[in-house]
Image (tube, rainbow, N blue to C red; front, side, top):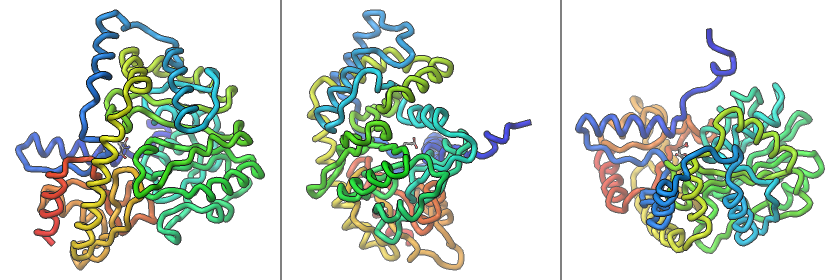
Length: 387
Ligand code: GLU
C-alpha cells in the first residue's frame, strides 16, 4: 500500500520527544523539557507587532510562491552584512522553515542513488529528507577529531557518486564548529570534485569563547556550488513562524521555486512580514540570547562533568550539550535509549537519545540548554539524584 519512499522514513525524533513531554505534562506529570531545540525566549515585540500590522492591513492573501521581494532583499542585505555573501534576488528562495529549503534542494538535485555526505553525529532530519528524495546518505564519522569535521575526513569519504556535502557549524547536536582553514580546504575539494555544499547556518550567532562563524558561501569561486540555508527560527526565537531561506545558484533556485509553487505555495504571508521585521529591525535580541546561552553553556559544562558517568566536551556554539553517558551503562541500562527512558520515567527529564543523530553518537544524549536556568539547575539536580 505504501510507497517505498515513505517506508524509508521515521518521524522526527526531536519533535517526537517534545510531543511526548507535552503529553505527559497534560497528564499532570512534572516534566522538564530539554528535548527539542528551541529558544525559551519570546519572539521580540517589534516582530509580533509587524505581524499584527500585516493582518490589520489585510496582507493575508497569496504572495509570490518564492517569497515577497522585500524579504528577499532583506536576506540579501543580511548576507552581505554578516556573511560576506553576494547574492541577487534570483539566488534567493523564501521557504517554510529551513526544512523546506533542504527538502526542495534534495528534490531538485538528487537522482536515485546519488550520495549525500553527512558529517556524523548529525541533525536527525538530514538523512530522512535525503531518503525521501531517493538519495543515499553516507555518514562521515567525526569522533576522531572531537566531532569537528576536517577536510581530510571529507577527502577520505568522497566517491564518484557523492553529489552533496552538508556542513553544519555550529553543529546540532554536538555544538562543535568546523574551523575556517578546514572549510577553505573543503572548498578546494568541492571545486576539484564538483561537489555541491549545503551550509546550514541556523546557529551562526551562537558561538562562544571568541569563536566566529565563517560562511563558506563567501568564497566567490564557489558561487555555483554552495547553498546557504538559514531561518529566523533560532536567531529570533521564531520556531513556530516557519520562515527559512536558501541562497544559491540561480538555475537551481529557480527550479526549487517551481517545486514550491506546486507544494506549499508561499510561506505564510504574515510570517513573511514578521521575518522582514526580524531581519531589518533592531538586532539586540540576538546578543541578549547569545549572552544567556553562554552563561547556561558554562553552567552545564561544569555541572554535567560532575555527574558520575557523564563526560561532556565543551560545546563551541549552538545550544546543545552532547554528553557521553556510557559511564552510566550497566546490566539494565545498556544504551542511550534505555538511559533516556530512565530519565523521563524516574526524573521527569526529557532529552533526546543518540538514535536521532547517527551511530557515532551512540554513547550520548542531547540536552538542549535553550531552557531557563532554573529548569537547567533543577534538571541536573534531578539527574544526579537518580543516578
Ligand atoms: N532543530 C530543532 C531540534 O533539533 C527543532 C526540531 C527539529 O526540527 O528537529 O531539536
